[in-house]
Image 1 (tube, rainbow, N blue to C red):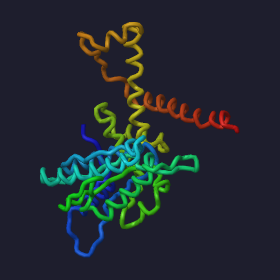
Image 2 (image 1 turned 90 degrees about the vertical axis):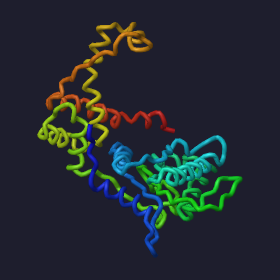
Image 3 (image 1 turned 60 degrees about the vertical axis):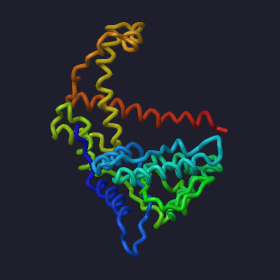
Image 4 (image 1 turned 180 degrees about the vertical axis):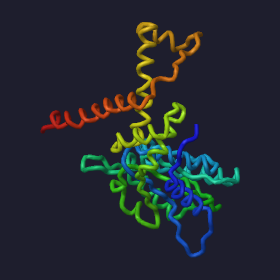
Length: 292
């Protein structure tokens, strides 16, 4: 399956990574590229596709790894992964990058109730220090005077205004707001439904009917179409036997034929999903439970 990469997205990430491997006299190149935008628009997946196109695997860090019961562990993890990436560049003789997913979720401060821990402070300070000294990144308790190879850092998030302001200033972090255009959406959704033989006209109609939805909506819609066949499988096997039929069994895996991917059926299922989204917004149970 060939996935679509937005030309604008490809250009931004590829230029940032390449620029960090060049020696541009008198030019200060930001080490960090921050890709931000609303949820579900494929920031992470598009970035991974660019890495794959450029022919290397990044060193990954999740936003969930940026907190720990032990003070200093996340900051040390960042330094360790950075040194691993630099060593990978030296040994393999190819590009590498650090890729931090959902940085704002792990290091951001959303309101006054968000706990600002020692680890949060140290993560922000560590990233600032690495951005300022990318060839001299040391581990606590040791010192190596050998300069490291510069490793570009790509971070994703929804709202970078929650991060420590000095970290995201120009010179340390270059910002890129990702909002897929209509053509981008048509290309990406076409890749999602490529194996289902939808025509270009159907893809355009599907995107235009759900123009306000993020990219992940269409992926979830494709998954929802299989529910009918799975429901039929459960009734056929018996709900009491589903576990034994699927787990640790010698029987062949069940075969699900290509379901009904007609435009009318997709629009019907999509409308049901939109209805569920509206119910969540309308109910606002949190307001009722947290009246005090």
